[in-house]
Amino acid sequence: MATAAASRRHVVAVPYPGRGHINPMLVVCRQLAAADAGLAVTVVVTEEWHALLAAAGVPATLPDRVRLATIPNVIPSEHGRGADWVGFIEAVHAKMGEPVERLLDRLERRPDAVVVDTYLTWGVAAGVARGIPVCSLWTMPATFFLALYHLDRWPPADGPEGEEGQSCKSLDQYIPFPVLSSVKCSDIKIFRSLALELPMKRVAQVFSNLRKAQCVLFVSFCELESGAINGISQVLPCPIYTVGPSIPLMSLEGNSDKIQREKYSDWLDAQPKNSVLYISFGSYVSMPSSQLEEFAMGLHDSAVRFFWVARDKAVTTTLQQISGDKGLVVPWCDQLKVLSHSSVGGFLSHCGWNSTLEAVFTGVPILASPVAWDQLVNARLVADEWKIGINLWEQRREDGIVSRARISAAVTKLMDLGDVDSLEMRRRAEELRKASHSAIQEGGSSWRSLNSFARDVVEGKLNVAENSQ
Image 1 (cartoon, rainbow, N blue to C red):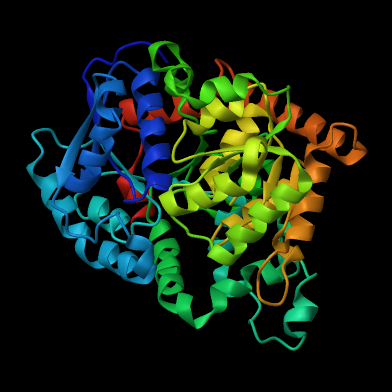
Image 2 (tube, rainbow, N blue to C red):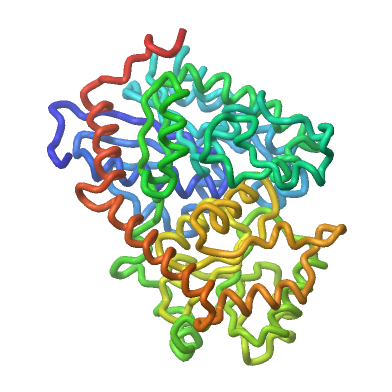
């Protein structure tokens, strides 16, 4: 939809305060602004996040009709929040809702819709109380959404089969959706731990509130998760829109081609095609130092070229000493551009959803080393559902660590361009790459869905009364 509406509509977007949530929300906001010239979007972030985004130059890349608004820093700082993850979740639950509601009340123009991250427990109620249509944005795989939606049907962690008996059992034996067959009961056992009791209570609250939303947006796309998306459409009482993959395409365009100005570009350019294993474990969840050491030694043993993003300076120095001239260790890079480089032939990843989508979008096979939350399900999808990678989760020892020998063997297999299994992963990865590009191009499944959502907002078709009772 490229035509301007008779009167401009105003959408307020409220992401969960974390990089893995803010980035896809900003992508969706850009998409909305591009879909209809009559839409203006206000994105609400904390003062700290506004400063972080400004330092990264994000505001300058936003369309004129997408602007940032701030609330005070009522939650713990982004720096070091991983030290008390549960405390951070509780702070977002208890302290962030009120300042967001005050901002909604003082806006010069009343919002015609509010797009809120699904994990914001107070988000739906804030809109419903003001008679504003609420659109929930899910920034993880649709498969994980479907599993959490049926949380009450999950088997107990201490069931009669025990952990060993459940390890091979698929979740679809408890939740009647074949799409969950690749998700094992052992993958969700971690969610039953005492440490996650309070976060899971919030998750249950989130999905209870979700039934009052007017619609749900997914940053996945139909061709990638058709079974889960069809299953969700059967159980949700509201419309769903698939608008993914949520890829920041602006980072691949024109003057923003930052990789050309980075010192590591010469190193990548000098490597043979598909010979480099790109390594990044995300910006938030930390990995034990003992596991990092096993990865470093395993890579050394494999003799595979690698490009590793390690944000800790001490870790960077140690890794570079171990890697020698076979690898390069940097504190930062533009991930999407590096994955798009012709020398990169594999991605060792924690399997966060944004990273997974970027690997799919660039057609790069994945060596999955999940740590927490949806990453375990994402790794299953990568290895067992889409068959575009290898999952290291079940190769852990009793202490939870994957040995250097297993890492070396997996790296060697993934990066061996003569290996039959590796070639098949690459073939399937290329198919998904083409599908992901087609989905967001004009006429594609996500393009149509996004434009349908924009049209419904502009024409005022989101009815608060239908689902808010």
